[in-house]
Image (cartoon, rainbow, N blue to C red; front, side, top):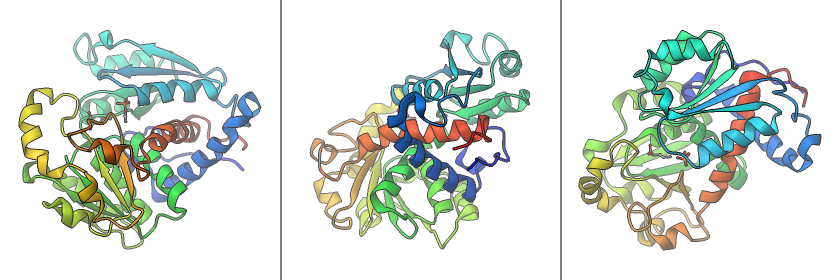
Amino acid sequence: MTQATLTRKDFLSVLDLDATDLERCLHLAAQLKADRALGRLAPTADALNGRHIALLFDKPSLRTRTTFEIAVRELGGHVVGLQPDVALGTREPVADVARNLERWVDGVIIRTFSQDVLKDFAAAARRLHVVNALTDEEHPCQALADFLTLQERFGQCRGRTIAYVGDGNNVATSLAHAASMLGVHVHIASPEAYQLPHTVVQQATSVARHGARLRLFSDAADAVAGADAVYTDTWTSMGHEDEAELRRRIFAPYQVNEDLMALAKPGALFMHCLPAHRGEEVTADVFESEASVVFDQAENRLHGQKALLLMLLAPTTPL
Ligand code: CP
Ligand code: NVA
């Protein structure tokens, strides 16, 4: 079996994949997870032989940076760890950074603030594959791990319902994009000023398949009623630290606790992209409960991203 080439050279958004690509990526991720035990004997162990992938992180990271470094190495490639003192767009124009890197490396994995900066970067370098490792607006690599985790638990996800409770942020956006493409219903409960942006609702609606519905709620209990999984994220995303106190007050009714989980379907999963703040968006008992699959999500970051790198950079690797 070989992997077909993606139509886009970059992965800036889940919307850069079509539904078939997304399903194929998740299928490949599951296969890579099973093959990991083979180590250097895995059929993909040299898929990125001689290729260089740079990592540029303007915000902190544990999971994304670590899993991308391991992913590149396990596929036989070389990691170039750039420091934030590259100062994207400050020391020199974003496009110039891209046009330099294009002469040396095959791909760049970027965590930064603005999605527009990422788009400018990707547009400036035609030969460079650019991957979004989180922006203020989207976190598409997280969504790959989230749906790999759901598929492991549910088999087919189509027709299931995920309730996302909290800030209508980057994680919620990518979750909504992927869910809609995979035929999964999403209920998002947020305070009024923190609802998922209208453009994201329109995007999710336009790519929805198999009758997937995205519904916004103001009441967490309404969103969670009967859900197969309950997802939350930090109330204060990176870059908004000066609003933390205000947000703690506004989001208090949106805490995922045992009472809220009891409204979901019996056996419903608890999900979180991490890092988590016990006593804020989730209580310690829910975080540590049997329902919690948060470390499966974290583990699956590796496998989802390996699949993505193969599809972007080595689509003809025999498997
Ligand atoms: N979930 C996630 O992206 O974690 P990091 O911020 O640690 O990379
Ligand atoms: N919404 C969070 C996700 C962290 C992985 C943030 O942007 O900080």
